[in-house]
Length: 262
Image 1 (cartoon, rainbow, N blue to C red):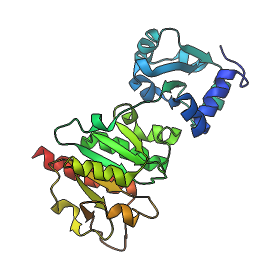
Image 2: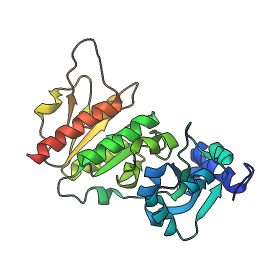
Image 3: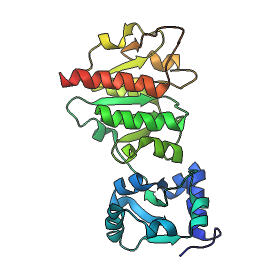
Image 4: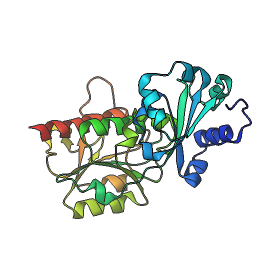
């Protein structure tokens, strides 16, 4: 059992939690909690850490998964586990997981792809929520600019509620170039914009579709928005000028999902 916060494994977990550079170098990330552990692909799990008290009162489903984990479990003293955790009330289990990978071709394999293109989203919670909403709406992939927050940030991971494992995603070097590539594949790119020319639910999204969503504070760069096939807006009542990026993305994605069910 690990009883010291100076243990090298404890230090590695803390570094992976806190530093994007370390996550990138080691191609690893950390997930916390029962749900995130149970949904983690077994072949991607490198190490599992469980608090001593969690081991004593473990849910049956966790026992089953741990039994098949091939000896990668480390028991940790409760006080040390709290130092490893990124949450105020740790659930008692976390694991180190290999980073995920996907190509644009995989995202475009669907008959009529539905994509989200994100430009410089900065809030980890927003990014995680977009992943979760994207999975719920049937999105086939999420493409992100290099200025978007690290998808493996612990706050992003928590906000995905497990969608990180199932939602294909990719960082791209040039978002404008990516828009062009999608248009070459006959995918219509709609920019979410306050000055959109069309109301979002007046457009058709049954065929290949991509939504461009901009930075929380500044929206889309004008040069990025101009690359889109058109711009769409979500009408606002009262004095509200705009919506949270994740909320706006969710509204657009579920409108596309609604149309595709008909």
